[in-house]
Length: 588
Image (tube, rainbow, N blue to C red):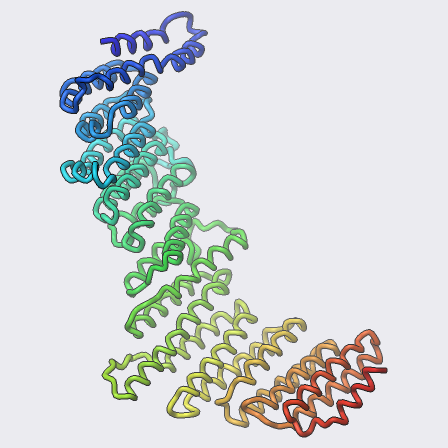
């Protein structure tokens, strides 16, 4: 036929002329390939080219000729041309013939673009509601591809007989001559995408592909060695199912196995993809087994492993841990006890992360546990009203104990964050006491949290600027607390006022003591005499400071504002005469 003769002539061109002009002739051959392809186009346009004739007569002859002519350029171009010029219906009917021919191709032919082109065309055709529905029902496309892809992949691995102990280089090729794994991985990645498109949610098919891939890696590289471009391909292979199967991939037999072959960087990429999909798509973590499986899978993000680099970029670690810290907020279950078990499990995994991670991860566990408190109160309220609601074994006090241990662990890593969490915990205990049917039930817990906050302030916070800022935070918290015994409240407020008066800079002392004056005029305390004592102390500090530094005269105005505020909220000890005197000072 014209097709066969033109192809033979095209192939013979490489042997004509001197060897030094071979590169030039190859370029000419490449430019003339369209003339050979034109014969296939005309063949596809013949009126008698029916599906039956194509499958029984035309294609067998075409494929036999392509595989008989052992020329790399010819096979590469003609395999691609067959896919392009004939309709999709024909390809479905003759899929097995095509795949068998691919397995017979010359070892140097790059099958990746050929196989991917075929998959892309078939996926578009088979996902069409009208044309593809019947075809996919009558043809086991997955089994055909899986059966023949093994042979297609093996032909690219001439050294596949080497033992699995051979050492892989960063691009996935073994140092003892094992073939580069990149083409094989690209084909498998394409097959994975093809399968997810045609059979979305089919875990069994995905696991079979991963099993084939794991077998290939066992023969050609060692555990934890695969990186570079080949590693990236495996990452793509593992990330593909995440979009459609999410946490279901953890139930697969071969998914975690395949992850073991990747180096640290690639394992971390897969872990990040997993966490991102869970958080962005709002997937729920609803079982303890699921949480344990997930955190074992993403261990490269959660803790240091044997191949973790000695130095990691601080900004990168921060970004990764902020992502991981979102996971506790995905814990959702109608059973409060089950939720707390999951939170506790997450706390255990986070505890393995070391100081550089704890500062980002432990606060999220703290808040996840605290979010269970309203649920406990709601259950208690329903039971009090006579509703038959199961009583959980978890109590509010157990949650507060968990919060206490978590903040204690965090304090050595980040005292400032820990101090803020102590104050938040105190506020939560106060709210629990307000909602309790037994007032004072949580007073001791609240006082313990505030005491820990004060101890943290005294022992761990040494910078004056941070001390000044945190005094305002502590005052703001304590003024909202209503459950403390009077003597406990007085002890804390007095100590806080003393801390404010001992700051190194006079200007900061004045502002801090002025802030502490609110401790004596709030929900828990109405003691105008103590308010006035604080304000008068501020005036003394201001007078001393302004005399040494006239540029700080603005402090008089701030003191005037404080006096006016307390006068307006009816503090009897703050009289109009004080305000008038301060106004005169300000005018001067």
